[in-house]
Length: 73
Image (cartoon, rainbow, N blue to C red; front, top):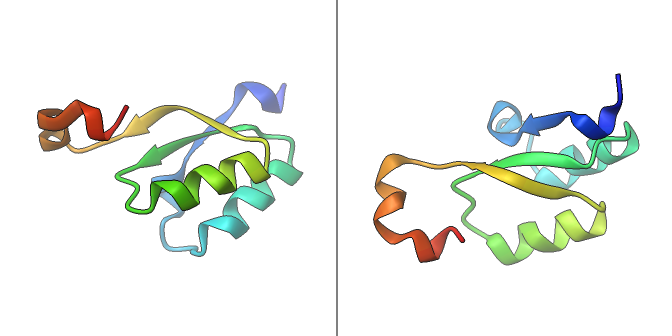
């Protein structure tokens, strides 16, 4: 299977912080996509995604977050 087609939902690894270790491990395994969730420190997360050449084509968000779509786009 092509690891470039796999995306991990970061929520499943939320107890294994810091997230940098998770992103580094996934990158070393050849993965380049993750699904984020209600990220509080987006600037830091964006830097980590850039550092490990990853992207987040989807996001796991709470329904109430849809009240302010500008905060998630």
